[in-house]
Amino acid sequence: MDAATLPIISMAQLDSAEGLAKLRHAASEVGFFYLVDHGLGSDAQQDYLALSQQFFQLSAAEKQQVDMIHSPHFRGYNAVGNEMTAGRLDAREQFDWMNEERALAPEQLRAPWQKLIGPNLWPDGMPALKPALLTLQSKLSDITVNVLQKLVESLGVDRNALDATIGEQPYTHAKLIRYPAQQSTQQGVGAHKDPGYLTLVMQDSQSGLKVERGNDWVDVEPIPGALVVNIGELLELASNGFLKATNHKVESPTQGVERYSIAFFMAAQLSATVPVLSLPPELKARATGPSIDPNNPLLTDVGNNVLKGRLRSHMHVTRKHYCDDPLRDLLAKNFAYMPTADICDECRI
Ligand SMILES: O=C(O)CCC(=O)C(=O)O
Ligand SMILES: [Fe+2]
Image 1 (cartoon, helix red, strand yellow):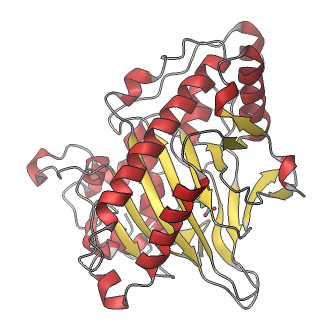
Image 2: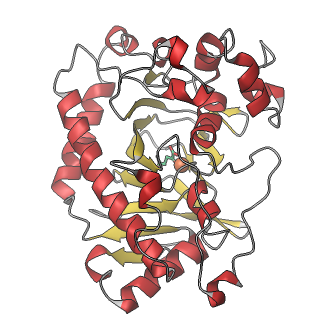
C-alpha cells in the first residue's frame, strides 16, 4: 500500500473546522496519521537521525556505560536482545530518555511507578548528545501538546479539558532506535499499542513500520519531513474508545540496510488519573468503550499504565530493580492480571 493510505494532516489547517474534522476522522478511524507543517523541518530531523547514528557507533564499552541495567528508572541503552514485545525478543538497539528529574529517596516511595522518576543516563563519550536530545524533547513535547489540544477540540470538547492531567509539562519518554539488517524478516519490534496519550515517530528513509487495519498490516512508508502520529492507550480511555490506540509493529530491514527512527511518547503526569471526556451525543453514541484484553488492560492511572509496559519490555531491569524491592508486594497486587512470565519468570512477582 502506498503512503496516501494513511491520512496526511497539516498542522497549519487545524484552525479550521474542516481541518479539525479531518483530524478527528484520522484519529478515530485509523489511529495513525502523518503530520506535516509541524515546525520541525526535514533538515533538523536528518540532523537528529545523524546524531542517533553517531550514538550507536560508539564502542560497546561506551554504550554499556549507560546500559539500562544501571537505571531503576528505565533510562539508557539496550543492546539487541534486551527487549521483549508480545512475548518475543525484538531485534533493535535503543537509547531511552525521559523527563530529566531527581529520583525519590527510597523512604519517599509510595507506589512502584514512582521509581520511574529519576535522572537520565548520558554517555561520557558523546557530550553533545544530552543538550541536543533535551532540546528535541522540548520541541516534540510542544508539538504533541498542541496536537492533543486540537484533537480534544475536534471532539467538540473544550480544548483544554486534559490540560490538568498534564500540568506544567507532560511526562515524556523518547527513544533513539536502530534496527539492524537481518537475514530474514524478523521482529524489529512486535505488535503493540503505545501507553501514553500520543506518539510521534521520526523515520529515516527505510520502511518497516506497519499499522494494523482490519486483518491487514499497512506500511507506513516514510514521507520526508512528515512525523508519524499515533493514538496511545490513554486517549482511547479518555475518549471511551472513540479514538483508537492501534496495534503496530516494525519488521527488520532485510536487504543489507539498517533502519533508524526516533519515537517520542507523550503522556499525562504519572500521578494523574485520566478522566473520560464528555463527548457530544453524536460522538458519545459511537464511543463503545475501550478495548478489553485481559493480557493488556488499559489503566486510567497513568503511572501504572506506563510502568506496565516498561516492566514487561525490559525484564532484566525489572529483575534487578523491582523484584527485591520493599514495594514488591504492592507491585504484585498492581499487576496481578499479567501472566507471571510477562513480568518476570524468575522471581514470580
Ligand atoms: O521505530 C518505529 O518506527 C516505531 C517504534 C515503536 O512503535 C515503538 O517504539 O513503540
Ligand atoms: Fe509503538
